[in-house]
Length: 205
Image (tube, rainbow, N blue to C red):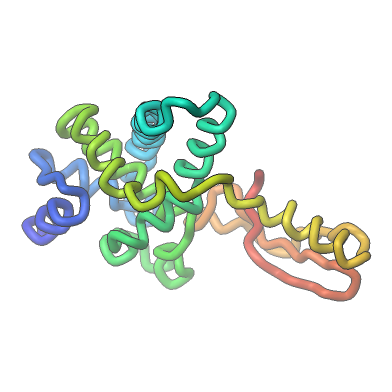
């Protein structure tokens, strides 16, 4: 199992780890163990931001700060991190508790985004900033020049849709408990737009 994980990391990240335990931790969700990816995700989030900002500074020497900031916000967004995680097969590598897996945590943007950031944090601790930066550039290479703006928040998009279709603003009501293994602050919310009711997990802004 360890060799299989090491081979997967070498193939997908371009980095063969010295301390494999760091990467096992980066793929372990809180539903599986008290020792999990959360601290590594905290670190990896900062490494991703710095590596991406430095990359954009080099790639777009004539762009003003505002435009580079918009690019950065897109590239480090939860949705993009989750897409990167899916691209390299993180869902199949995640270590989840039984209930979390049954509830689909392996396809949650929050879980997958955290895991890819945790892997970046693991590379940083394992080998330093330059290898971590190389991993970021490898995984984000197809995206760095294409995205112009961050995905619109679902609540904002729904409000704009309601206005465009001459409907009153959406009304939200809490109808269920939190789901901690998908999102520690997530709740099941019912939203109604003039007779159209939808129920789902809504994340705070």
